[in-house]
Length: 265
Image (cartoon, rainbow, N blue to C red; front, side, top):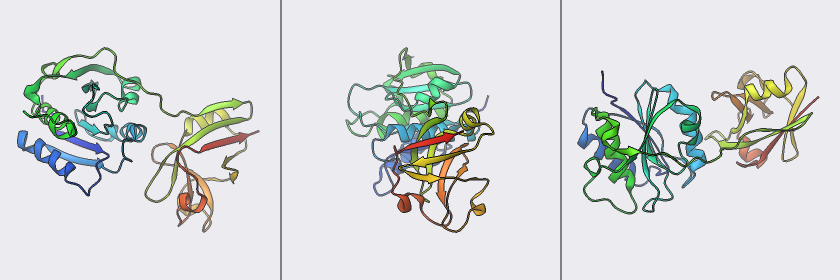
């Protein structure tokens, strides 16, 4: 059986400081053959929800047995636990703070391990950089073929936190919210195409955010008129709010967390 030598990284470290590079150095010192892929290091600081949504929307596009290492860790140095999760197809390593809630809740989870074996951490563990001292070494050792039960014992009650979900308000209204704003200023919502089909079907409907109406859902960006505010089903199969050749967030002032009303007949 081949070893899981791909390790992805998701952090809120940014690229100004050396933290990401140091983590990669630790991984490669343990396993020089590891293939490290940066998913993003631009998660807003301490934003567990944003990181969890990023994991949810990205993990399945990698080969089976990929190790997904995520460090968004406002509880670093506290009693929060370091964990290793094995699902049917992937591994996940990071803090037990709700970061992997969608994985634990929606994927076929085979094992959840509290990482306690100090043989798979650096000798000196700081109070502020467990990404370097615990998580990166654990991922590196796992990528060499170490069995997960060698890292510690089973964790029975991992932390699960609720992620924003759309809801039906009444017979002609539903509500979601803006959960992410990408680098283009597109406003990504938690309203999935399947939810939209369930509540509205073939009925006519429109959206409203902060009293701003959005009447058209288009098949692709270029179908919009210049500077038109419109919706599209994006690559994560959820509704996005965009402006053609412009920045929807800056133009509208809509922020993450703002509610999106769906009105249908």
